[in-house]
Image (cartoon, rainbow, N blue to C red; front, top):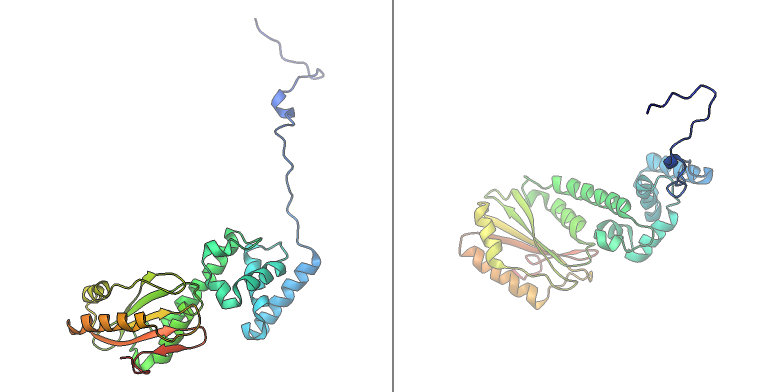
Length: 256
Protein backbone atom coordinates (compact mmCIF):
# COMPACT_ATOMS: atom_id res chain seq x y z
CA UNK A 1 0.00 0.00 0.00
CA UNK A 2 1.30 3.50 -0.79
CA UNK A 3 0.82 6.64 1.24
CA UNK A 4 0.03 9.94 -0.43
CA UNK A 5 2.12 12.94 0.58
CA UNK A 6 0.61 15.29 3.15
CA UNK A 7 -1.03 18.42 1.84
CA UNK A 8 0.57 21.77 2.69
CA UNK A 9 -1.99 22.59 5.31
CA UNK A 10 -2.14 19.24 7.09
CA UNK A 11 -0.51 18.35 10.42
CA UNK A 12 2.35 15.92 10.22
CA UNK A 13 3.26 14.00 13.39
CA UNK A 14 6.91 14.50 14.36
CA UNK A 15 9.18 11.71 15.63
CA UNK A 16 8.95 10.99 19.37
CA UNK A 17 12.70 11.47 19.90
CA UNK A 18 12.43 15.20 19.25
CA UNK A 19 10.34 15.55 22.40
CA UNK A 20 12.25 13.17 24.69
CA UNK A 21 12.55 15.50 27.66
CA UNK A 22 14.46 12.91 29.65
CA UNK A 23 17.36 13.34 27.24
CA UNK A 24 17.25 17.14 27.23
CA UNK A 25 20.02 18.88 29.11
CA UNK A 26 20.41 22.57 29.86
CA UNK A 27 23.28 24.19 27.97
CA UNK A 28 25.34 26.82 29.76
CA UNK A 29 25.93 29.71 27.42
CA UNK A 30 29.35 31.40 27.57
CA UNK A 31 29.40 34.42 29.81
CA UNK A 32 31.99 37.03 30.62
CA UNK A 33 33.41 37.18 34.13
CA UNK A 34 31.98 39.90 36.38
CA UNK A 35 33.35 43.37 35.81
CA UNK A 36 35.16 43.48 39.15
CA UNK A 37 37.13 40.35 38.17
CA UNK A 38 37.96 41.78 34.75
CA UNK A 39 39.14 45.03 36.33
CA UNK A 40 41.26 43.19 38.92
CA UNK A 41 42.88 41.05 36.24
CA UNK A 42 43.63 44.06 34.05
CA UNK A 43 45.16 45.88 37.02
CA UNK A 44 47.44 42.92 37.71
CA UNK A 45 48.45 42.66 34.06
CA UNK A 46 49.17 46.38 33.83
CA UNK A 47 51.36 46.33 36.93
CA UNK A 48 53.18 43.24 35.71
CA UNK A 49 54.02 44.79 32.34
CA UNK A 50 54.97 48.09 33.95
CA UNK A 51 57.19 46.78 36.74
CA UNK A 52 57.73 43.07 36.15
CA UNK A 53 57.45 40.32 38.73
CA UNK A 54 59.47 42.38 41.23
CA UNK A 55 56.54 44.79 41.52
CA UNK A 56 54.15 42.03 42.62
CA UNK A 57 53.86 39.91 45.77
CA UNK A 58 53.82 36.14 45.40
CA UNK A 59 50.04 35.75 45.58
CA UNK A 60 49.45 38.22 42.74
CA UNK A 61 52.01 36.59 40.47
CA UNK A 62 50.34 33.28 41.22
CA UNK A 63 46.96 34.78 40.31
CA UNK A 64 48.28 35.80 36.88
CA UNK A 65 49.34 32.21 36.24
CA UNK A 66 46.01 30.82 37.44
CA UNK A 67 44.06 33.13 35.12
CA UNK A 68 45.50 31.23 32.16
CA UNK A 69 43.92 27.99 33.37
CA UNK A 70 40.74 29.54 34.82
CA UNK A 71 40.01 32.64 32.73
CA UNK A 72 36.47 33.15 34.11
CA UNK A 73 37.05 32.32 37.77
CA UNK A 74 37.94 34.28 40.87
CA UNK A 75 41.40 32.80 41.40
CA UNK A 76 42.30 34.78 44.51
CA UNK A 77 40.98 32.09 46.93
CA UNK A 78 42.82 29.38 44.96
CA UNK A 79 46.10 31.30 45.11
CA UNK A 80 45.62 31.78 48.86
CA UNK A 81 44.90 28.06 49.34
CA UNK A 82 48.02 27.05 47.39
CA UNK A 83 50.25 29.39 49.37
CA UNK A 84 48.75 28.22 52.66
CA UNK A 85 49.33 24.58 51.70
CA UNK A 86 52.88 24.85 50.36
CA UNK A 87 54.27 27.93 52.10
CA UNK A 88 55.55 30.14 49.30
CA UNK A 89 55.47 30.72 45.55
CA UNK A 90 58.53 28.56 44.81
CA UNK A 91 57.14 25.57 46.67
CA UNK A 92 53.79 25.94 44.89
CA UNK A 93 55.49 25.86 41.48
CA UNK A 94 57.72 22.93 42.51
CA UNK A 95 54.97 20.82 44.09
CA UNK A 96 54.23 17.51 42.32
CA UNK A 97 50.95 17.25 40.44
CA UNK A 98 49.31 14.75 42.86
CA UNK A 99 49.96 17.13 45.77
CA UNK A 100 48.60 20.09 43.82
CA UNK A 101 45.41 18.21 43.01
CA UNK A 102 44.77 17.71 46.73
CA UNK A 103 44.16 21.46 47.08
CA UNK A 104 40.51 22.49 46.79
CA UNK A 105 39.52 23.92 43.37
CA UNK A 106 42.82 22.90 41.79
CA UNK A 107 42.18 20.75 38.72
CA UNK A 108 44.50 19.22 36.14
CA UNK A 109 44.47 22.37 34.00
CA UNK A 110 45.73 24.45 36.94
CA UNK A 111 48.37 21.86 37.86
CA UNK A 112 49.61 21.66 34.28
CA UNK A 113 49.90 25.45 34.02
CA UNK A 114 52.02 25.54 37.18
CA UNK A 115 54.28 22.76 35.91
CA UNK A 116 54.78 24.58 32.59
CA UNK A 117 56.01 27.61 34.53
CA UNK A 118 58.36 25.38 36.53
CA UNK A 119 59.72 23.73 33.38
CA UNK A 120 60.34 27.12 31.78
CA UNK A 121 62.27 28.31 34.85
CA UNK A 122 64.41 25.18 34.83
CA UNK A 123 65.07 25.47 31.10
CA UNK A 124 66.27 29.08 31.45
CA UNK A 125 68.55 28.27 34.38
CA UNK A 126 69.97 25.20 32.65
CA UNK A 127 70.74 27.15 29.46
CA UNK A 128 73.15 29.34 31.44
CA UNK A 129 75.41 26.42 32.29
CA UNK A 130 75.01 23.77 29.59
CA UNK A 131 78.07 23.41 27.35
CA UNK A 132 79.95 26.09 29.27
CA UNK A 133 83.00 25.78 31.52
CA UNK A 134 81.70 25.11 35.02
CA UNK A 135 84.55 26.86 36.80
CA UNK A 136 83.92 30.20 35.07
CA UNK A 137 80.16 29.97 35.57
CA UNK A 138 80.07 28.61 39.12
CA UNK A 139 77.51 31.14 40.33
CA UNK A 140 75.21 30.08 37.48
CA UNK A 141 75.68 26.44 38.50
CA UNK A 142 74.64 27.27 42.07
CA UNK A 143 71.65 29.25 40.81
CA UNK A 144 70.59 26.34 38.60
CA UNK A 145 70.89 23.80 41.44
CA UNK A 146 68.92 26.08 43.75
CA UNK A 147 66.19 26.68 41.16
CA UNK A 148 65.69 23.02 40.37
CA UNK A 149 66.07 21.48 43.83
CA UNK A 150 65.74 23.88 46.75
CA UNK A 151 61.96 23.66 47.02
CA UNK A 152 61.39 19.94 46.58
CA UNK A 153 59.42 18.09 49.24
CA UNK A 154 61.52 14.94 48.87
CA UNK A 155 65.22 14.31 48.29
CA UNK A 156 66.46 14.20 44.69
CA UNK A 157 69.95 13.19 43.58
CA UNK A 158 71.47 14.37 40.30
CA UNK A 159 74.88 14.32 38.66
CA UNK A 160 76.54 16.95 36.48
CA UNK A 161 78.94 15.27 34.04
CA UNK A 162 81.90 17.28 32.71
CA UNK A 163 84.41 16.76 29.91
CA UNK A 164 88.18 17.32 30.02
CA UNK A 165 87.71 21.09 29.73
CA UNK A 166 85.22 21.10 32.62
CA UNK A 167 82.37 21.88 30.24
CA UNK A 168 79.00 20.48 31.29
CA UNK A 169 77.99 17.75 28.85
CA UNK A 170 75.08 16.19 30.77
CA UNK A 171 72.84 16.90 33.73
CA UNK A 172 70.91 13.84 34.85
CA UNK A 173 68.65 13.05 37.77
CA UNK A 174 69.73 9.67 39.12
CA UNK A 175 67.11 8.98 41.78
CA UNK A 176 64.34 10.30 44.00
CA UNK A 177 63.72 9.39 47.60
CA UNK A 178 61.77 10.34 50.69
CA UNK A 179 61.75 13.44 52.82
CA UNK A 180 65.10 12.51 54.41
CA UNK A 181 66.70 9.83 52.23
CA UNK A 182 67.52 9.16 48.60
CA UNK A 183 69.03 5.90 47.30
CA UNK A 184 72.35 6.37 45.50
CA UNK A 185 74.30 3.65 43.67
CA UNK A 186 77.96 4.65 43.18
CA UNK A 187 78.52 1.97 40.53
CA UNK A 188 75.69 3.36 38.38
CA UNK A 189 77.03 6.92 38.70
CA UNK A 190 80.47 5.90 37.50
CA UNK A 191 79.09 3.59 34.81
CA UNK A 192 77.12 6.48 33.35
CA UNK A 193 80.23 8.68 33.41
CA UNK A 194 82.04 6.09 31.27
CA UNK A 195 79.11 5.94 28.82
CA UNK A 196 79.25 9.74 28.42
CA UNK A 197 83.07 9.77 28.25
CA UNK A 198 83.02 12.23 31.16
CA UNK A 199 86.23 13.22 32.93
CA UNK A 200 84.73 14.76 36.05
CA UNK A 201 81.57 14.80 38.17
CA UNK A 202 79.64 17.15 40.42
CA UNK A 203 77.10 15.49 42.70
CA UNK A 204 74.03 17.43 43.77
CA UNK A 205 71.20 16.60 46.13
CA UNK A 206 68.75 18.54 48.26
CA UNK A 207 67.67 18.52 51.90
CA UNK A 208 63.93 19.28 52.15
CA UNK A 209 64.44 20.20 55.81
CA UNK A 210 66.25 23.31 54.56
CA UNK A 211 69.50 22.56 56.42
CA UNK A 212 72.28 21.56 53.98
CA UNK A 213 74.55 20.08 56.67
CA UNK A 214 75.68 16.65 55.40
CA UNK A 215 74.66 13.51 57.26
CA UNK A 216 77.03 10.62 57.94
CA UNK A 217 75.33 8.75 55.10
CA UNK A 218 75.95 11.71 52.74
CA UNK A 219 79.64 11.73 53.63
CA UNK A 220 80.01 7.96 53.26
CA UNK A 221 78.22 7.90 49.90
CA UNK A 222 80.39 10.73 48.59
CA UNK A 223 83.60 8.91 49.57
CA UNK A 224 82.39 5.74 47.83
CA UNK A 225 81.70 7.60 44.60
CA UNK A 226 85.01 9.46 44.82
CA UNK A 227 86.95 6.21 45.28
CA UNK A 228 85.10 4.44 42.44
CA UNK A 229 85.61 7.41 40.12
CA UNK A 230 89.30 7.87 40.91
CA UNK A 231 89.93 4.20 40.12
CA UNK A 232 88.83 5.01 36.56
CA UNK A 233 90.67 8.34 36.36
CA UNK A 234 87.46 10.33 36.78
CA UNK A 235 87.60 13.27 39.17
CA UNK A 236 84.88 14.15 41.65
CA UNK A 237 84.97 17.95 41.68
CA UNK A 238 82.36 18.54 44.37
CA UNK A 239 79.19 17.46 46.07
CA UNK A 240 76.62 20.21 46.58
CA UNK A 241 73.83 19.91 49.11
CA UNK A 242 71.01 22.34 48.40
CA UNK A 243 69.07 23.78 51.32
CA UNK A 244 66.21 26.22 51.27
CA UNK A 245 68.33 29.38 51.50
CA UNK A 246 71.90 28.24 50.83
CA UNK A 247 74.06 25.50 49.37
CA UNK A 248 76.89 23.57 51.02
CA UNK A 249 79.98 22.58 49.02
CA UNK A 250 81.86 19.47 50.17
CA UNK A 251 85.01 20.90 48.58
CA UNK A 252 84.78 24.32 50.23
CA UNK A 253 83.79 22.92 53.63
CA UNK A 254 86.60 20.37 53.76
CA UNK A 255 84.65 17.16 53.26
CA UNK A 256 86.56 16.39 50.04
